Amino acid sequence: MTSPILEFMVWLFIVIGVILAFILILIHFKLLFPVIFFFGGVVFIGIVLKLMLRKFEPYEVALIYRWGRFHRASSGGWTFVIPWMEKIGAVVDMREQKDYITVPTITSEGLEVNLSTLLYFSIQNARKVILNVRNYKSALHDFVLSRIRDICAEFTFTQLIVNAEKIFEKLRESMNRVVEGRWGIKVHNIEVEKIEPPRQVMEALKQIRVSRANLEAKRFTAEARRIVIKALGEATKNFNDRTINYLYIKALENMKGAKMMIPAEFLNVFKGAAPGKAIASGLIAGRTFDEAVNMVAEQIKKENMLKDVHIDKKVESAAFKAKK
Image 1 (cartoon, rainbow, N blue to C red):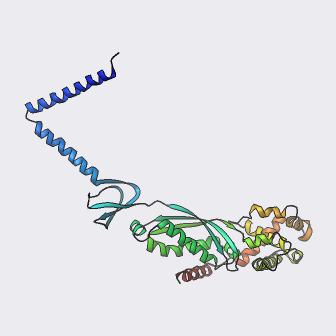
Image 2 (cartoon, rainbow, N blue to C red; image 1 turned 90 degrees about the horizontal axis):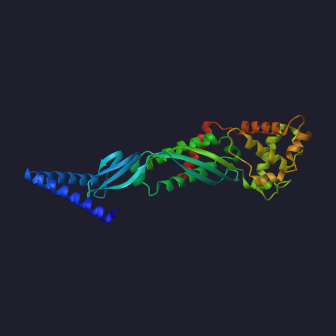
Image 3 (cartoon, one colour; image 1 turned 90 degrees about the vertical axis):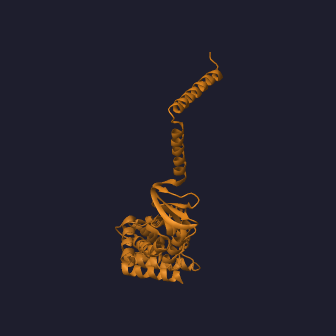
């Protein structure tokens, strides 16, 4: 068997022989220097193009700086960057992005509510998003969180549940007037994923009668009792606070488009007790628990569905307060 080293040496001599023969032929025909210049030129051009040409993805925009100052924005494809004079300052992804934001907020009646939202946005102006703000994702996150807190403070908890879709659409329009002009970002949608019921109210559900010390829950219960009696009749006046609140919260949870869910930890409170059993057993004659909940939901919508003009005023009011 032939040694690998010996085989390598044989091939090396063959390659060197071919190169020397090629050079001798060029010398004989006086073509050596033209060929050297040609290949040297090709190599030189290749090196220059390697240093100057840059390729970007179709969804990217590159900011080119010249002598330390912004010079131009280059969209996807090939572009020239002059070595030593110019540099790529930033490459911006123009595709739609999303951010998950959890917002602890307080409604107009003082109830503590947690909202989980999905924010969909995209960059419209790469220059603004890099040169006008230090960290656009963090700045947008904080701005949206602040605006959601401000707008929730303008509405009651029930109004927030019933009108959530309209409220957040108006909020999106209001925010775009700020962030698109200032940072070059456009918010496409603010989607409410989940609204947790007020902690004060959920804690009150553990009690047959709401404590006077829990003023927010006391006010909430009073409003819930008024709605339930109006929807289901005088027979419900005998219901205790827990049953009233449960009916009201379930009505909010079951509304079409509502994003509210009762936490599992509180559902255990009603096992064996119940509001559903009490209602079905004759306090509301001839109605099932689900029918009663639907009737309460209709009454809630009737009294809390807001017109666009009213929502606009609330959104603008929140924006004005935020500027102060």
